[in-house]
Each structure stands twice: as structure tokens, then as C-alpha cells.
Amino acid sequence: MPDFEIPGDALEERFITGGGPGGQNVNKVATSVQLRVDLFKLALPPYAYRKLKELAGSRLTSGNEIVIQASRFRTQEANRQDARDRLNEMIAKALVRDARRIATKPGKAAKARRTDAKKARGTIKQGRGKVQLD
Image 1 (tube, rainbow, N blue to C red):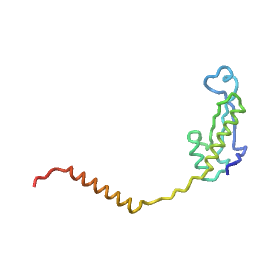
Image 2: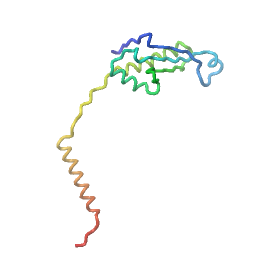
Image 3: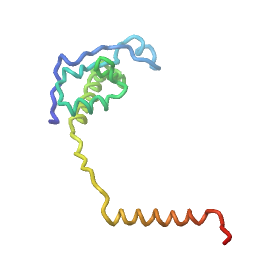
Image 4: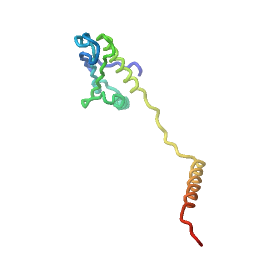
């Protein structure tokens, strides 16, 4: 499922003025993009939904929206595309299913080595006790 289609009604874009240094252009022109994505409208499978929430981290709001801010470029269109690319990348990572973990047990030889090591350690510690005069 690498080519996931994002529904248009799940996205909301807002153009804002960029912060930081950059001269007059930054203060006049709203080139930064704030992309809001409603997680419920994406209609992802449950495993991808959980993973996407984990990947979003602090970008996730209490209303289950992911907020992506893009202000790397000088133009609105480039920043808009950057935000959408980052969202697509995040969704693609979320759709990759983790390998199922199979619980394993230690073998007999490993258990024997562990008990031998514990016994050896115990004898060392026992030798540190008080000296008894018989």
C-alpha cells in the first residue's frame, strides 16, 4: 500500500508569515504553510493509525490532528509541497507493518552456563565472610 491516497477533506492548509531572520520579504509575505491533517478522515488500518500517532509525537494535537509546519523555502508552493511530502513520508512509514516478534526461551546450555556462573560468584562472595578460628 505505498501509494496511499490522502482524501482532500482530511487536509486543511493555512499560510502564515515566517518567523526568524529574513528581511522584509519574510515579514510581508505569508509563505510558511501550516498543514493540519485529521487522522480519523484518513481511514487508516488500526496498526497504521497507532504507528502514525507514535511517529507524529509532539505534532499531534488533542483533537487527533497532525500539524506540519513548513517554512524551508521562499515560495508558498514549494513549502506546500514540502509539507505534503513530509506527510506522505510519515504515512508511508506508518503503513509498513512491523515484523511479528516471536518470544524465545534460553536453551539448556545457556541455563547451565548461567547457573555455573552464579555458583562461582557465590563461592567468591562466601570467601569474603568473617574468618572463623576453629
